[in-house]
Image (cartoon, rainbow, N blue to C red):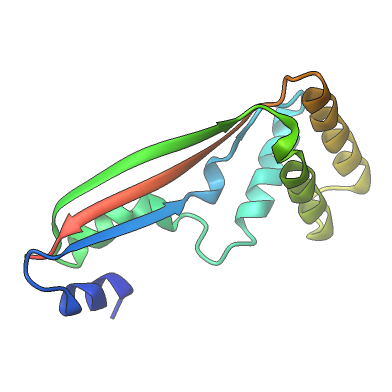
Length: 135
């Protein structure tokens, strides 16, 4: 039994369920190295147990018998240096996982550091919000 099916069993008729999560494959990062960026993002996604679960929320809720299923996407956009540690961290994680070389890690991280220092960093993180009602 899935967790959404379990929720359907414990919710009163007309009860509402809300799911919130991110799709780890949909990080949007500006870079002078787009292929390398895709490799880094994909590597990070592969480290999460269910990296694409949020994109499945709608169908999971429908399959569990929920009605009035609605999905919204809210995207956080970051363009200052506050997110730089996260960006360099995902490059480090990709290196540790063997997805990129140490040289690629350093090139990519340096690009992001330069962007942050010039106020030109861009990171967008979509969050999926799904809501539904029990029959």
